Length: 304
Ligand SMILES: [Zn+2]
Image 1 (cartoon, rainbow, N blue to C red):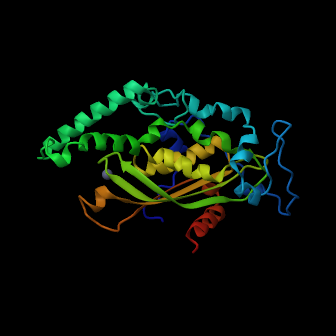
Image 2 (cartoon, helix red, strand yellow):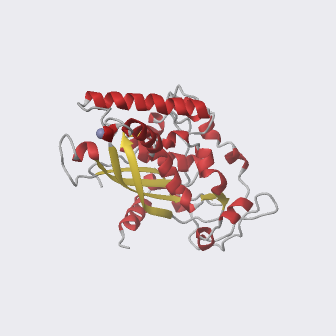
């Protein structure tokens, strides 16, 4: 784990990603009361409905439950992602989370524009076929440019996903102050240097703040999915997942560990099949407390 531990300094990660909240401090886990206080009933957010309480209930949340639960006001705008970040020239009015120069244009394509985009992309793929020494007019390749264009747009559909929509309906007020971990989430992404796949698994953990909010369990995987369906480097993908969770629910800490195989390494270049790259991002309690971090690392490695 130490080898390529990109476990990043919270402020370094923040600066790199242009986060304005770089010096936000997480509460210390040691502040937790030593004798367990009785779990408070879930907070009534809007006076009429309440999130189910207890972690078991949390796991059994139905879509119907989710619909009844009212978002904290700040989440309806997903404010941190709604602003241009320090150091980033790209405003993010749609809550995409770190959009690129062409992201907003793609997001706001009309149906016709989306069609034109795909046609233009297919034209480029036809050129690729010519350049590699193929005949784009031979039967087997006739539809390849169109197919590839569609596939590539699908593989990068994360550019069309607003984090506020991804997370939107699944933030619950819940007095749960223990670690929540979802591990071994499959990741399929494209490395931005070679545009070939890197695939692997990511494990995500967080500790909700006391009296704070938890995320619907499936949303951890959805956040990972959104960021992985963009051109990435593994280190940044790892950090973006951690920071999105951090900004969404302000937990006491977030931990993300990803292990992936990069096709640019295994099928070209150094050709080291089986080599994997491990990256991690530790924020808040996971960064400050060795014990908390070790507990997470032990749990994600424990046998099934
Ligand atoms: Zn690469």
